[in-house]
Image (cartoon, rainbow, N blue to C red; front, side, top):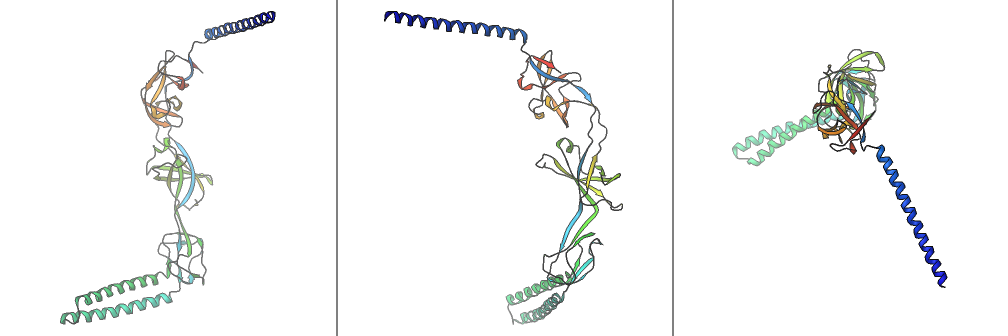
Length: 354
């Protein structure tokens, strides 16, 4: 029994010795590896850089869109009745106020005559009341009611006459009849569609501009318009609307008014391209947008100064696509860090790579 106990103790001692030797050996190897890594690495953070120089500023851009009619409306019936005449067809050019159809106004004429007769009768009653009031035959209230009745019936006459005149359907705008929804002899109710009239003497080209482009636009700017349907022709337009708010894609809707009087070549629904041409700009200092710490709004960049990162406050100007104009804070020939800023603080040692 004593012999077995001695063997067990010796076995434990041997195992502990072996474990200690393995741990010591691993520690030595790790130390050697660390020493090798340390000897080959200076601790500098790897970054990309770019030299600050003056570059030409090009504000010109183009944007595609769709032509829309200057005015496009559907003329509807205001009264019920049977269509007795249709005076225009699809494709006809009409002027504002021109009669385009007539609705049977026999019942409307009866309403006018009835209202007119009631009005004349009320006038005679008013005369009698005014005469009787002078002799004390009627009260002031009865006289006032008679006067109110006259005014009410007079308004009824005007309304009936207006409805009767509405039997002549008139074009509310000048343009071209794009669709005709009625036929002679058909019966229409109030609100029924009669004609679709489109004014294409002027068109609107709806395009978009991003935040860097829209700041250079103003109402009235002249714009050259191109159309793939007429590649040899160009059209003149002017900016008529600039949205004060961006859409869901963070672009700003812009409308360009285009004159289409020369032959009416352009049609609503065609595609077009607005070419925005700006005067030549003086060269300016620019840096990539990626040079800014966080975002352009931070107005902070890192400048490479003797292999160290120096935080610098700058004043950003116009955003020109992927580059940003620098108004103050940098000089021509300095070097800015364009990537790796997340690992930097002021004074960090850096190593620039291509």
